[in-house]
Length: 237
Image 1: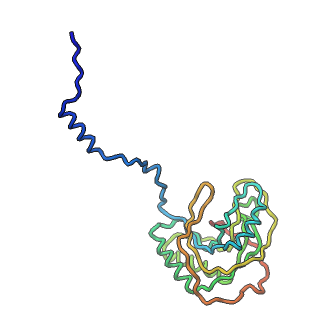
Image 2: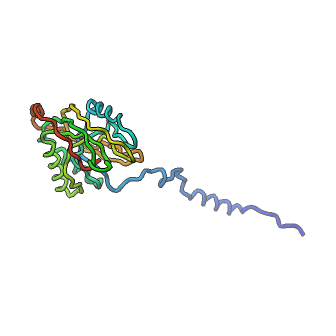
Image 3: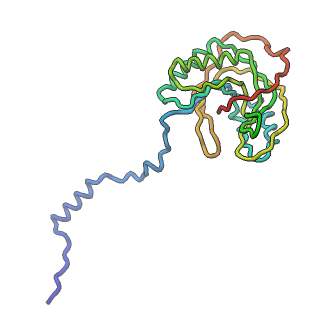
C-alpha cells in the first residue's frame, strides 16, 4: 500500500495564514518594563543654599583626611539644607516654586560663615560629619519656608533647624577626625529647590529651580562675630 502523500495547505489556507500574520501588531523591540526607569509617585525635595566652588575646595581638602568607611559628599553637591520635604506629589512642585519666589523677594543676599566641625550624633557612633554655618536671617528664612510649606498642605520634617553643611556620612566602622575650624565665608545670592534622587553610590541632587534674593543688601554682619562652638544638626539630605 502506498503512503498518503503529505500536502501543504491549499491556496485558500495560505491566504488565511498570510492575513493572520499581517493582522498581528508589529513587535516594538523594546521591553517596556525593563528599559523604562522607575518613576516614583512622590519626589524627595529640599530647599537649600548652594555652596560655591571656592568654599567647597577647602572643605574637600579636609575630606581627604577621612579614613575607614566614611563616604564624602561631592564638593559640587555641598549645600545648607533649610527645609526637607520627603514625599512631594509631582503636581505640587509648581506650588513650591511659587513659594520660593515669593519668600526670596524680601530676603537680602545672606553673608554666610563657616565655623567648626561636628558629628551627628555627637555621642557614640556618629553617622554624619558636618561643618556648622551661620548667617543673620538664615533661621528666619528656614522658618518662613517651613510655615509656607505647611500652609500648602505638603509634608515636611518638624526637626529643629541647625544650619550646617554635611561633609561625609559613615557606612561602617570609621575613626573620628579632631575638630576643625574654618574661617571662610560667602554671600549667598539666592535659594535653590533641589530634588534628591537615591542611587546605590549615594544620593544625587537635581536643581528644580533657583530663587534670587531681592531684598535690600545689608552690610557686613559678621565683622565682629566671635567663633561659635559647633552644635549637632538633625540628619538631613
